[in-house]
Image (tube, rainbow, N blue to C red):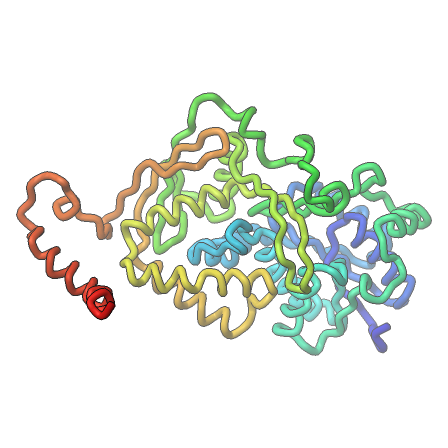
Length: 399
């Protein structure tokens, strides 16, 4: 146990793990515990969360509305960089952890607490993400990670502990997979999903209908961007959080954004996760499409070469690192010309860009046309081809 802990701020959701942890901290440390819940866009009855926290033993419950900050300062920067982990995952959980941790540290300082605690297990990525943020923002705080020190090392034992202390939990022995929701996505893992051969049950999905059940007619939308950030849908200006909420609704109604993958955790093991990211899927498709007419070819090549490293840093918990700041600045410089509108067709799980326009477009019809033009001398291509093939020609002659 961490010595001389006088007050703890717990990152609290009201679910099985953090409910048990809340009571366990009170029993083990015999000190005040502040239960802090972050509203990052999940569907939640916050009055019930507050009541449950107090009933479970919290000395104080603080609920912070972080939706707009989450969208503006975490989701949008990542989407300006086209962040994607291992070619598929749009980093919904990874992006939420640093803002949750940042607010937790702020509350700890405000409440004169000397310790912070979280409900991440010793097997997962979230322990790294939370604690890297704590250490980057306030290394003087003690960190308590119950999963690494207690003997409640299974969901079965947690549920037995909860039953012993009369703690109501939303998880049952019959349906033990866990889920985590925020403004960008909802993730599912564990339980029946631990066997990667098992197809997810349709009843599990929350944000989207199946593509089979989506409407028979497509939905067309237009998204406007300024310097790589989405600012309006169909001409209506929206705040970052409201814009993403609107896209989630549109995407979910058309069966867009489901992902089933086995990913490589930072701690070394492979893990199966199922995700719903309807709005993010639309947003990334639109953003990349607008870049095709607004980004210089060589700038795009360099930027794209940095995306895997940038995405890996987010996934592994290095949001507050100096190298992350450097890469974000680089990504944002590339976005200065990404202004314009993209029209998309949403249809049965597909998000298809069908039109794009920009005042800063590098596409010029007069050069690209297959009809007669007066701006391009086709005979120039012969020398261009010969010079680019020169090294290959010399190798062939040597043979």
